Image 1 (cartoon, rainbow, N blue to C red):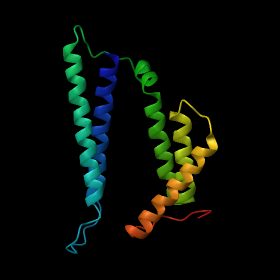
Image 2 (cartoon, rainbow, N blue to C red):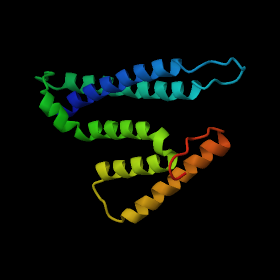
Image 3 (cartoon, rainbow, N blue to C red):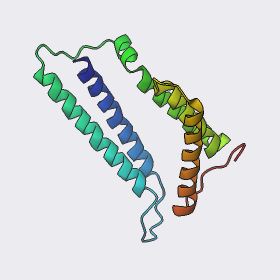
Length: 159
């Protein structure tokens, strides 16, 4: 039952973030070039995320309805304790977005992936293999955005 309560709260947070993200994507200027606009891809991602949030919400409500004596009384301290990794993940992502334009794509992305790995991984063996994977993943994404999609990522201190 605790997981169902946690999932309801997480689903509501996801849906609230989708509302803010959709508002932000609506502020992207429209050029009417007859092609797909810049807000098209973010709107698709937001729609998929909102759909998954609704699925999580419905599933959680269904699980709570099946259980007897289920009440929605969660203390704030209990909520923080159960969602510690989720909260830290959002905080790390916020720092990543803030640093992205200052130190550039390469450094900020590698730091972001390393911080997420240290937070979420229970098995921290062979760190050098993970770091090589992070660097390779960062370069592959840079190549895709720069060459295939013609989206230029910000450069920073080192790159």
